[in-house]
Figure (cartoon, rainbow, N blue to C red):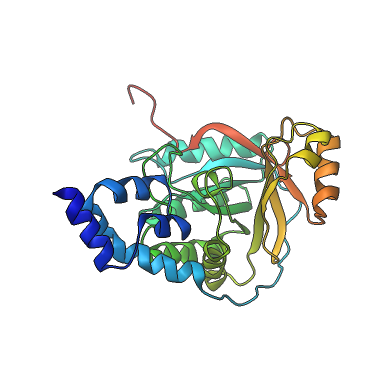
Length: 279
């Protein structure tokens, strides 16, 4: 009976699971779409809004410079409840270790929590903040297609406090999803609405290009908009100079690449200032 109701819903709304996959829905959404008619009925209006967003035309964006001399810790999220002081101390320690800023990740929910964390970064003496968007943790069953208006509003609010915006991070990055140009354009439009001068950072995913020879055998993936002034680079071994140079030459990349083992150092856990056991 549930399967019959599911088929009736799809026919009535002129959409199919394969069509929704084509417009960019991923495993969490499609998994529930295929087996839960109530879930489909509740969420289909949101998915159809994203269908329009992904297929829309967007104005060309200008290239804005990204500050140099960055050494970023990743990743900053809103402080856990009661842990603001701990997060501040963690950020001060990172600044003393030579970090000049952070990758601040909006994970959904109230953007003011991340905004408060960004303020702690400034008070710790760091000045470089790259904004990114991704549900966390990476393994969580959370959609990368939330309410589009709420997502855009959050990014618009956060952008004035950031130097740059990374178009793909964790759940929204190339190693996790097939990227549609409309998705990237929508995010860029939202951050530029809040900060017209914010730099855009694209993404290069080189795996499995562990050697220079493999660069020519396996085409690396990239999501580098024309307005990007830099790009993150990940997924190709330990980033030896030969691979870097071959990638840049092979793909004709002229903008700087931010390497996770050089410019961005991943922390073992989010910079939450998490309370230790017993506190």
